[in-house]
Length: 245
Image (tube, rainbow, N blue to C red):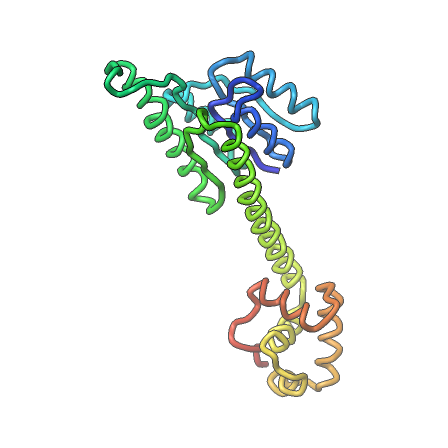
């Protein structure tokens, strides 16, 4: 399966650690990133003990070199990137020093920019992937629970899309195994043409069309004509009707 990056991981009870465990349980290889090696190692140990896959990566969210290296480590299998880094020091504007504000800006804004840029650079070319940028470290427990529930819903949708993509790939592969004549008959069936019309267009007998139809249904593992037509549509077989001889 693919790879996930979660940066801003701290103590086991924190949201970052829980996100890592959540997506490792789904089968993703999680790159557990943050500033404290001991905290990262503890999260990775829990994931591995539960049968998951995870790797600790010490990284500064505000270091361009660190972020680029982190995404390079994820490689082409990157499916999910979550920016969970944030500044935990509360304060009122009237009491803030310039240094405090700049540090907060670097972690929340600049770091988010670096992380988001690298994620987009890798996800856009392949047309797939999910990027989440949220300063969530100060959310109360009930809000964190709601966020995790929302993520569950979102990733269920992603899984549905992944299943649909796999069905499309399978259908295209199986159609590719058909003979040219079988593809022509399948196109006619997908267009809703009766056997006699397909036979006339292809210059063969209706009985021969029936034989090809049976062969195609067997090869495509279709239990009914409607299922076969659905597979043909998923595979993109329709191009205006059956080819003529």
